[in-house]
Image (cartoon, rainbow, N blue to C red; front, side, top):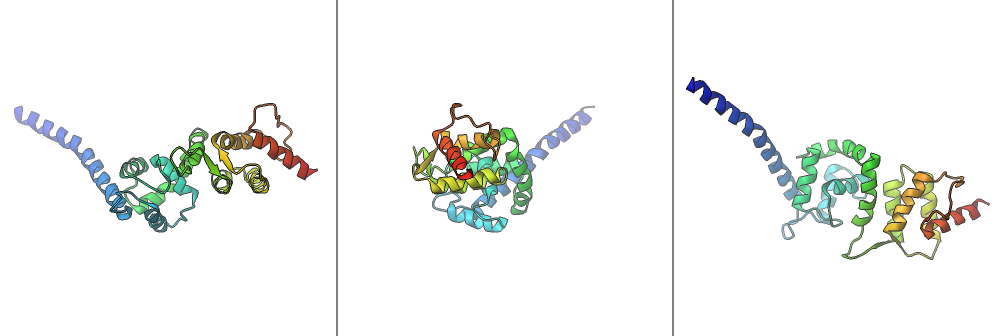
Length: 220
């Protein structure tokens, strides 16, 4: 009886260590992949490393999926991936190789475009573009590129007109978070192109009041 007890406890131990050993090996591969692209002196994947990564993934570095990947990793600094960020993101995606990371992209896109997640991703995209500490605004050209990247597919007519307006006007040089969030609210709530439910008394950012006025003037 004692022998069988020993046997069952040892097989239980093997069952316990089996999966954890597999996880450990997966994390080892994730780390090895990180050091394929990391700069030795900084210990991070820098902009040059990200460009190499993108070429291996066969996507442009300006592709929205790279921004989504940064969101998944909760990256804090634009153009840089730390080992901890890389570990957490790739573990969540179950991707320990370039081929697996490529295959994870469609699922990642689906995850980000869920309304609850997009409400987190959209302001993250803005914060990610704040390239300096304590910076609170992004320049108009950057805002235009970012709008096209994160909203262009969902709200093509609105974004196209908004970008045209931002390039045309000369009152604003930068965009802040309140204005940025206002753009998303506008796309979600306002009938376009009729604008018949836009009410300037509903505490819209002034830049959107000006945008709507510009649209109406051009329409007439």
